[in-house]
Length: 174
Image 1 (cartoon, helix red, strand yellow):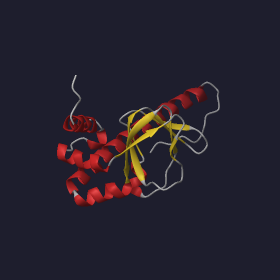
Image 2: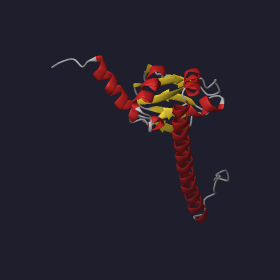
Image 3: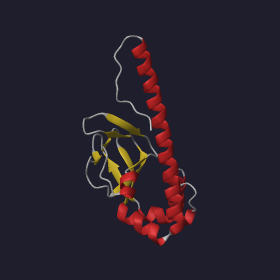
Image 4: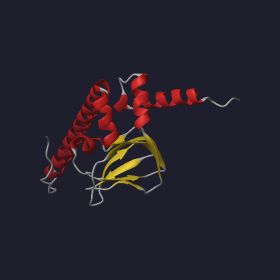
């Protein structure tokens, strides 16, 4: 069995990048530019990736493993599966981290610094437009899913109230 060449390995990496929703619609040449700003990172179980309140100076594309976004009070807010993305909102809005992000399993992925991403956006407007469109679509889906979950909780609350149980008063739909 022969060892894959560097070109074959690079093509495999581009194939993996194509499967990441943030990068859909990008050409192979554009994906190569993205790959050039990616920093490979491994995380051990319980390793802190991002800390609540710290500057949002990078985003992370999870390739393998599982992450959890956790509130400062310790509540699990979201589980991030492979091909998931974390940190993108803060990178684009300059807001600090909105949660801790912790590895639940041995994990690995690509980190992209805010500086590198902004420089790429300035150098290549087509990549910028495609990635921002993908981000808007991703965030829109997250909002849709969150609203559906809130509606589910609201219905459960109404059922509990109808059964004589006191209902929470702090569930809002946006």
